[in-house]
Amino acid sequence: MNWTELIGYAAAILTTGSFVPQAWLTFRTRDVSGISLGMYSVFTGGIALWLIYGLAMGAWPIIAANAITLTLAASILVMKLRYR
Image (cartoon, rainbow, N blue to C red; front, side, top):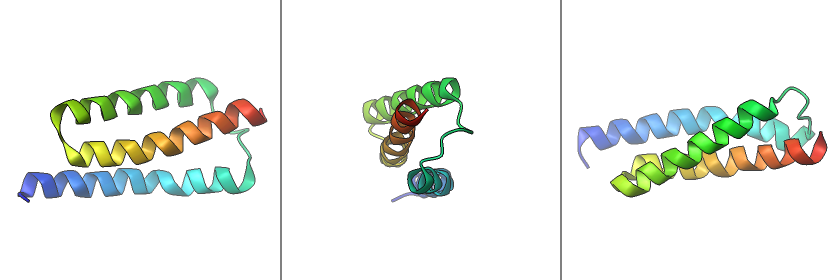
């Protein structure tokens, strides 16, 4: 593994990790009142595109981070639609 991959994995851990507390709070409380449907829809779409890009490039840090974040973001988006 070279230094650019290490930077990629570090970035993936930090950005995906920063998303986990919000997702956990939302799952635990089911409170989606402070979440913008428009923003989360666009965000989730963007994450899906980053995942596709990572797959096309074969960039595992991008693939791993965006697969996890897409799962969390899509789950929150579904909760927003269900509990609004």
